[in-house]
Length: 594
Ligand code: PEP
Ligand code: MG
Image 1 (cartoon, rainbow, N blue to C red):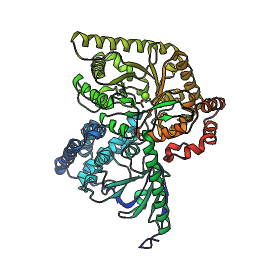
Image 2 (image 1 turned 90 degrees about the vertical axis):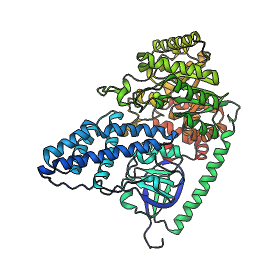
Image 3 (image 1 turned 135 degrees about the vertical axis):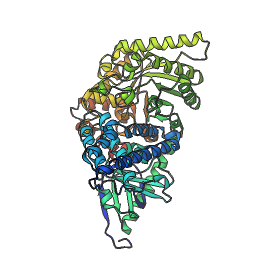
Image 4 (image 1 turned 180 degrees about the horizontal axis):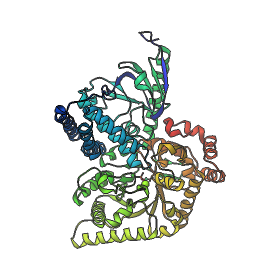
């Protein structure tokens, strides 16, 4: 029993980022935002009320500008989201409609805002496109911000927290997560969100334990309550008694020692027990993430997602700006390879200005290579920057969303043209770089033998390949149970690509999320992958699993897997055959897939 004789309470949510922390809860205060009263105003007060709303929006705008300015470089992705929030603050549907409601209905600004937002939310929430659904969450964050200014509630200023605490919130907005000081925040607990939500991804990137999707954490936990968060199992304990505290402290010591041992092994090569070496690479979205790939023992960069330099800015980057970033990454990693993927804009990485809001199926629309082959100037600028950076390290190029032979031929033609233009200018560059094709569209799997003639390597993008093969939106939680990497159809797809790679001599890589989950490693090894690329933090655990496996055995195992007819059956086969090895690496519940 704790000091104040309060009973211990155990909650269960989604373990989204592994690790255990014990500390005092800090409730991110949203007081005053959710309880809004309606009152009428007189005609004489209409202007005043409208001005009160305008001032609250202006204040929110200034505050967002200030946060963006203070956002460190390696949080640029968040700054980009905040820029979208800035645009939303002035959106006709929100700003214009709220003012109109005050004017027409003679109601207070808070009520007008609440009315407009719940209507917008209803409209967006049920939309099937990820992009639009995400905008619904953005609208709520933006309106909460305005509302706090209207009701004069104190801002949950996470930046000003001056003690070590565990954040408890219904949800954390990008504006809030971007202010997190790692020295102060031990963990996250939220009512909303899941493993793939923004908060989950941030928690994993920051390596902070997190349990999300608890539904009622903010009601059950009070400020300063002592809580335990186990991000591996998804457990949260409020007012732990002595016995529970001891149990979790021991669990934490074990976890940390185990994790440290795994991380230490990250520098060892990924040699199988029968002497085959795989290259284990890191995925990055920002040049600064190179450090973590190096720290975790990555053998290179298997996927450099280049879209982040394009998102959320008022204009596209210049060749010089791109070249600077690419050269930095190439130089830091040299002589290890850096795989730069050309712009994969739109689809789930849509930005309002560059996507067509009337597009019904953005994932099937003008994205990736399709966009680049249409916007040839944008593409050429990037290709020239890549070729110039190649003179400073070991760069390869990777083309996304290839769905037919002509696209890769066309892309390579443009690469040749970019090289020719640099040659004419006597610029320093290197055109002898490896050329890769992302295999992430089912037609590319079917046409792999033909596409192989144009490629040095394939990199399988399972995130999209699963989405397109199973017709399951990768970001839609209502169908997330159908998003199954071990679906027999996916196994057959992977087998087909692996057979083609072996027969044609094209190197076989994988850079989708599947590559970084130890559970899938025995199958990927058996399929003959040469390289796996992943979130840097996963590198040590994947290497450790590989070191315990024998390639010959995994090849036979793949034959058994291919005979299975259900995802569950395949998952069972994996755990029956490799459970001992897999239990040896720490996995957050959400990653375990059982
Ligand atoms: C993929 O689709 O698997 C992939 C690696 O690309 P992205 O997640 O950027 O679409
Ligand atoms: Mg993809």
